[in-house]
Structures are given as structure tokens and as C-alpha cells.
Image (tube, rainbow, N blue to C red):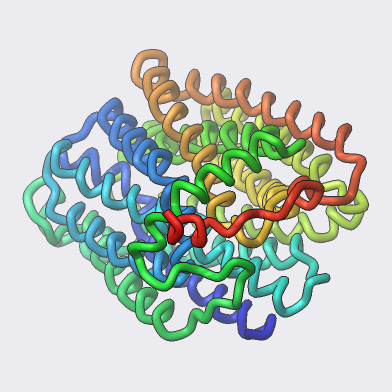
Amino acid sequence: MNITRTKRTYFAVLALNWLAVGLTLPISVLFMQARGLDLAQVGLVMALYAATVALLELPTGGLADSIGRKRVALLSNTISLLSVAALLFAFSFWWILPGMILLGISRALSSGALDAWYVDSLQSGDPAVDLQAALAQANTITLVALGAGTLAGGALPTLFSNLPPATDAVLSPLSTPFIVSLFFKIVLLLLIALAVVEPPRAGGQAANWRDGVRAVPYIVRDSIALTVHNRFLPYLLGAALVGGFTLSGVEAFWQPDFARRLGDVTGQSWLFGLVMALSFLAGIGGNLLSIPLSKRVRNNYALLAAGAVALQAAALFVMAVMLPAAGFVGGFWAFYLSNGLVTSPHETLVNREIPAQRRSAMLSVHSLATYAGGFLGSIILGAFAETQGISTAWFVAAAVAVVSFLLYVRIARQKTHTTSGYEQRAPIPDSSTKANAG
């Protein structure tokens, strides 16, 4: 598959996936509250979702490396369909929880699968491809889709405001974004089945699920060893953990805090969609800005990432101290601008340190760190939000973001060599052969 076709396919997959996700984002917490959950329960549900992802990240990433990224992506999106359907029929904490756990399983399966396929396909087509620019382009597509999805997701409840409330009926104003999301997930499943073609990889892949599952422990072991012995991956994983921690606080609590600042939100669900859509526009700006800024700092990606997370900490501080809704929204948009700015430099640093034959597993290790941070953030920041107020939770998040800044500064100071960590060691063994021999 050539680079142009690879990008078109991956961008279409990203657009459909994140459009489906974006539809539910601006009203997800409001939906759970309407179905009877308080803020502490919302935080707990999101924490258990993150814990599900974290527990399954490594084995599912190993499975994608073993049996193929396309197979795992198809399984992931099938489970995602089931999760949204389950949430539609959930009217209490104990029914919403299984839907979110299914969503966590789906997310763990998808994590690293098609992302690894994209990077490997690009490098197969052109070993000298500009990976940072390609990743920034992909992140831009993601944010465009999220922005469009959140605009639509915020508008749909207003357009169907004559439906029964979410507490009484499956078909309600707040459930309409979930229903439309189901449609896009079905189209996405068909696209992956028809358009994704995997390039050949060193070591190949297992011919069937049985051999693939047997190979997973070997791949997980190799991935852990790669992480432990790499000079920079522990710092990058630490930064990912902090990023998940801070993002969880913003995603979980911006809706109720913005609602508090507005007062009466009746008939104003569109405003939530607009604010979040523009936050993704800010993220797009950050992604696009990262390309010239990377060249400006001579591809010192760690230095650029350090500056981005410094801005992120400042944005969290502004969100905590600004009482007017307009000031809060400004800080909210600055947070997403900085998040877009840090993403592709960070991803480039990670991908430079991992081998192609373990890319899915290693990206799952990275995602594991992010979701572990999300789990901790949901629990810790949820407790602060419930007992001390949401502003206090964001003060804590701002302080934690400083840790990420220090990690990137350390990488920038130490990164004086140009070869990847894995290239300095022996080749990665073929785990599928080991599994078959066992």
C-alpha cells in the first residue's frame, strides 16, 4: 500500500471513529447524571473504565502484533457497538457500569492496533517519511472529527427536546447522540473490513487466533523488557501517565462546572457542543502549529513538549481561578491547544524508540500508562471535586502537570544520541515461533 492510500484509509477510519465518539462527548456526563448517577459515581464509572483499559492494554496489544492489527480492530469495533447499545438501555449505576466496561475492552483492543498499522505502512512505503508531520496530520483529522461530532452531539438533544426525559425513556433528547453514534460505528466496521490491508512484517503473524493467543505472553514479556532497558521510554511513559491524569479531570468535570457557571442550562445543550467543538479547533491549531515549531527547535521534540505542558499547567490554573464563564472557557480552550501541541512530538519520540514488530504492544504499553493516569485522576480528582470543589481538583491537576514538564526537560537534556534504544540491542525474537514450539 502506497503512502497516499495509507493516509486516505487511515484518515477515513479516524474520521468515522472520532465522529462517533465526539457525538456523545458533550453530553456523556449529563446523560449519566440524568440516569441517576452523582458526581462521585460518575468519577467511579470513568475510573473503572480506565482500569479495564489498563488491565487489558498489554495482552490486547500483544494480540494485535501476533494475529494482525486488522483482526483486532474488527473485534474492537464490534464490542464498541455492543457497549453503546448497552448504555442506551441503562438506567442506573449498575447498568451503566457494564456498558462502560465493554467500552473499556473495546478501547484496549483498538489501542495501538491501527496506529501501529499506520506507522508501519508509512515506513514500508518510505523509510525516510517525516513521521512527526504524518502524525500531526492524523491528529488534526481526529480533532476535526471530534469537533464536528461534538457540535452535532450538542445540537441533537435540542433538536429533539420534545422527546421524554432520559430518566424515563430509552429514546430521549440525551440519548439521540448515542443512536447516531451507532450508525457511524457500523459504517466504520465495514470500512476497516474492506479497506485496511496490512503490510508484511518481520516475524510475520500467527495464522489463527489460537497461535496468536499463545504468543501473547512472549510478546508482553519482550515489551516489558524493551521498556525497562530503554533510556527514554520510562520518562515518556511517566509523561503519558501525567497526561492521562490531567485530561481525566478536564473531561469528567468541565460539563458540571460550566453548567454551574451558566446557571440554568435548559435549552442550552448546544452551547456545550459549541464550547467543546471549539476546544477541538484549538487542538487542531496546536497540532498544525507543532509542525513549524518542530522545525524551529530543530526537531528537539522533547523541548517542544516541555513548553506545551507548561502551557497546559497554566491553562488548568486559569480554569480553577476564573469565575466568569468566559474566562473559564478561555482556559479550557488553551488546555486543548496545548494538548494538541504536545501530542505529535510526544508520539514521535515514542515511535522512534520502539521496533516495528512490537509496535502494537509497545503502543499499548504507552496507552496503559495513559489510562493508568486516567484511573488515578478519576479517583483522586473525583474525590477532590466532590469534597473540595472542582476548582480545587484543577489546582491539583495543574500541580501534577508540572511533573510532566520536568520529565520532558530531562529527556531534552539527555537525548544526545540519534539511534533508537531498541536498535542498540539484539534483534527481537519471533514470539510466534516460540508459542508454536511450546
